[in-house]
Length: 187
Length: 177
Figure 1 (cartoon, one colour):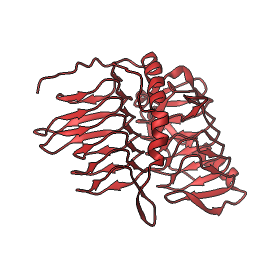
Figure 2 (spheres, each protein chain N blue to C red):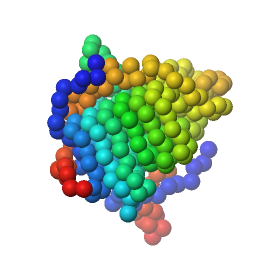
Figure 3 (cartoon, rainbow over the protein chains, first blue to last red):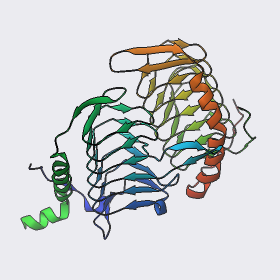
């Protein structure tokens, strides 16, 4: 599938050695606790709460505008504690989501304006369409679609979903280009 | 259970927007990007003690009367609150919208992404939840009990961790009316 290239201004983004592209308009709290494993795009308006617990985001993942990623908490031996949030590789999170899951696997698609409540577990290869609300402690199995309010099982996904997400996220990363390279190419 | 340790300090992170004339009780925690706004010509906002207000929450007063919010409430990420009064020990979950002139009692819980329409009065221990097919409204004490058991230790944790990572906004409790 061909994706229209998206251009961004080079001054608005920070590129790291691993190929992460992090917008300056995003708010990363507690940077020392946030690990981006490379080639991850973080767009403006995103809030990542590394101050509450560790946040790991895998390779070639994209987090779109105005999404909040915050670790979830639970009462544990009498005291409340926040626990780390792991997001796998090739994950695409669209705009306006609230993610406070315990873990998200690889090859996951999360649509616009979703609410992934506390301590949800999303396994590898699942699809969450727009405007879904997953209640707390939901487990989404592999190769399934969950949608609606509250999120329920809808249908199975084909085996090719893994390959599809791999290609899709890779092409999103590759078509996300700084505007300077465009002017160079033309001249 | 609800008797939390007396924490005097108010925690307000640097990115918050707070209008003049907002009174905030002791022990309240505001996460970054929360906003409490009084529109021009609108009345005061009075916040009680030990509330937790998470990211992107907007508390807006548009009416001319005072907006009073009680103690021990939890406002989760991205909810919008324009109502006239809120009691104690309520849980308002992510992305829910509470419209104008709504009165909320004590111990209510409003589920994620639900909308409370205008001029509703919620009595104590109401649970509201909007699903894709129906609108659920019933009375139950279970959500409040869970909230009560967690809230005080949650506050304690936030009071310990947040000042390590954020620049604090200085807040002086203005008693002028």
